[in-house]
Image (cartoon, rainbow, N blue to C red; front, side, top):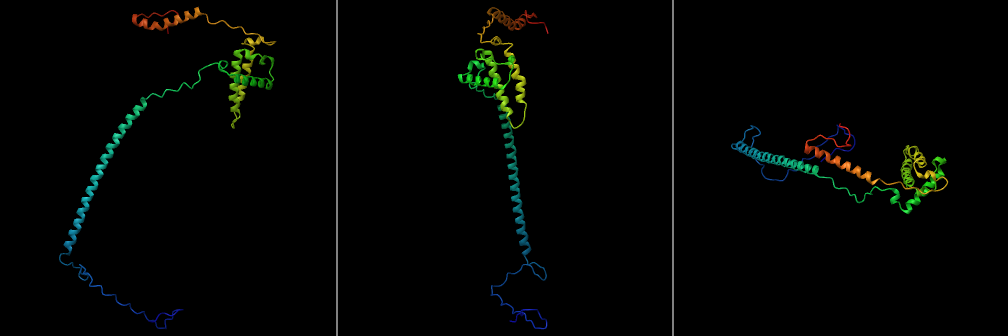
Length: 259
C-alpha cells in the first residue's frame, strides 16, 4: 500500500488509494425489508399488520388518558372539599379566639400605691440625703429655695424631695443619650425651682429657718360631716330606682339642676 509522502503535495507524483478493507465475517442473511425499495410496494399482509398495531397503541393510550383525567377530577374534588372544610374550621377557631378573654394580669408582683416615706428603707433615706446634699452643694440657691437641714422631719418635704430625685434620675439618664434632648432643662424649669420654692410657702418647714420646730398635726376629717356626705351619696344612688318604681320625676336634694 502506497501512502502520501510527507511534505507538500505534488500532483505530478502518483498517488494510490489505500487497499479496501477485508469484508466482514458472514453474519447470516439480512432481514427482508417489508417495503420494496424499487417499487415502494408493501408485501401482502404488512400494511394491515402495522395498522392494527398502531390502532391498538392508540386505543391503549386513549384508555390511559381517560384514567389520568378521572384521577385528576377525583383529586380536584377532594382538594376543593378539603379546602372548604379547613376554611370552616379556621373560621370557628378564629371565633373562639375572639371570644377568649385575655389572661388575668399577675397583680401580685405589681407594687401597690404607697408614699415613699412609708416604704423607704434606711438605705433609701441615706441615698436621698446624699442626693439632697449634692443638690445644695451644686446649685447656688437663694434663701427662698434653700433646703433646710431638718427636711427629714417633715414628711411632706421628704416625699417631694424623693419625687424630685426620681425625676432627676430619669432626666439625667436621658440627657446622657447619644441624641441631644431637653430632658434636663425641662427638669430644671418644671420641677427643680418650683419644688424648692414651694417648701417655703406651703409647708410648715418655712418657720424652721432658725432651727427645727416640730410640726403641728392637722385635724382629721370631721366624722359627722363625713357621715352626712355618705348618706347623701347613698340617697342619690337609690333615687333613680325609686323614681322608676313610683313613676315620679322627683329630683333629690343636692342632685344639681336638671339637664
